[in-house]
Image (cartoon, rainbow, N blue to C red; front, side, top):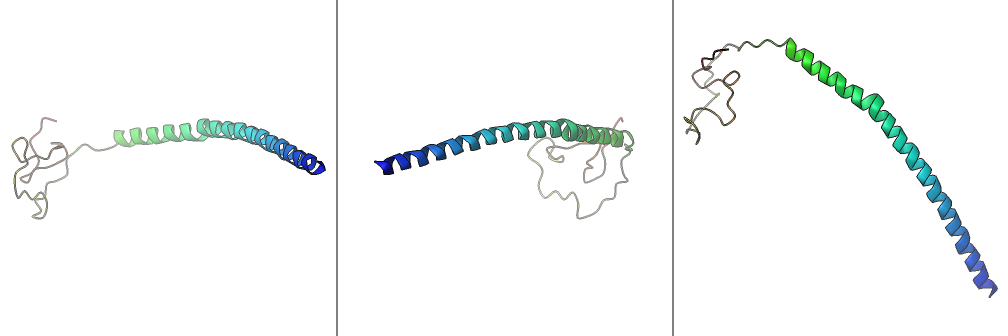
Length: 109
């Protein structure tokens, strides 16, 4: 009987210690959540704003002129036509940036 009481007290002490650990973990979780919230507003959001500003300013100073077309023989090789349109333009063709094998398209811009 004494052995059973001893085992019961050991079990109750271990459960009580476990509860204290869970309580400490809850406090640690709350502190960790607060830390990440502060980091989000102090570091992450200003970082995104600086990156957006940098991209905007670089786009304002970018020249919009087409580079000179040089017809290199190893570029823009067409062994068969594309299955859409007239067969000469890629699926995501941009006439301002992507030249055809014969050169840039005439544009109104």
